[in-house]
Image (tube, rainbow, N blue to C red; front, side):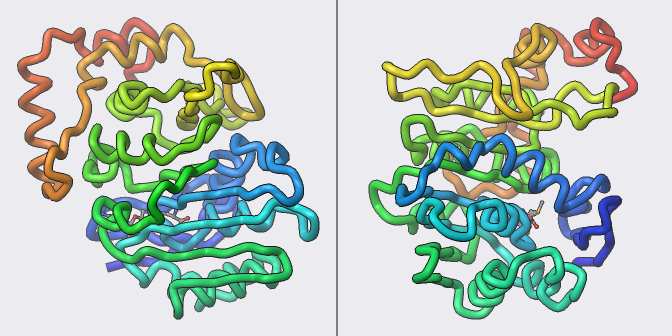
Amino acid sequence: MLSTRFTADGSFSLHSDRFAEGFHSSGGALQEANSKFVLPAQLDRFPSGCCLRVLDVCFGLGYNTAALMAALPNAGGPRLECWGLELDRSPLRLALAEPRFIDLWPKHVVAALGAVATDGYWQDSLRQHSVQMLWGDARQELQNLPKDLQLDLILLDAFSPGKCPQLWSEEFLQSLASLLAPGGRLLTYCRAAAVRNSLRHAGLELRSLLPKAGEKSEWSSGTLALCSKDRDQTPPETGPGWCGLSVMEEEHLQTRAGVPYRDPSGTDLAASILKRRQQEQALSYRPSTSAWQRKWGLLRQA
Ligand SMILES: C[S@@+](CC[C@H](N)C(=O)[O-])C[C@H]1O[C@@H](n2cnc3c(N)ncnc32)[C@H](O)[C@@H]1O
């Protein structure tokens, strides 16, 4: 069951009863798409004529792909090849029935969202943009992406690890990381230690998304994971809206919160993945996360 709501920036969003969670932070669905996905992606790295390959994991209402398309130049930008993974067709349908959602986007973006909702595919020969949906469980659908695909951007926007651990497991994140091109980036709102550790285990370099201006109490608004397979190029330490992990964040990864979610078969239910992790945490010699929180004065944000 999905219920509709408007976020603080006036943009339309949904709440899922099944996952007991909102689709976006209450601060703003559009604001989140722009600050956590579009800005740190640095689209100006992709010049005219080159190909920008993007995977939107958990397409939902389509905010992240739509905001990315809207941010690309109207003419003379990169060719966009985008794939969307999503279990449920209804969030996009509900969004397209809401005039205030439609009003957020340029015409070609609305056309793209409309076409993928009905046909699962959209192509614009003028801009040379395409969007292809793969409907189903992202863990299985990942195997239906083109062979040898090398992605420039992965936008990972699943429900939180506690609610949807299937899409934050060591194995799933490893599969996503293996799809990144040298210099490619995985972006997520998630700053969980378990997720960051899994991204690091997958060979990616971690950066922290900076909290929104004025949100002093927050220590990070997400994670940028860089693929540095290209040894000649040292990945940048800072960029727009992101910087290296602080000492506090590095220490967080050493605590019990850093124990990864595991889903060896790629088919486990959330409850089994959570139980397996609890058992591993109980046997772990890692320092407790509450001691880390006390040390850094974070107990109220736990
Ligand atoms: C936080 S919402 C995504 C918000 C979305 N990025 C947007 O801009 O609206 C999470 C989405 O994950 C989808 N989802 C949940 N489990 C999934 C799975 N195993 N595979 C693919 N999608 C899944 C839900 O249907 C929901 O649309």
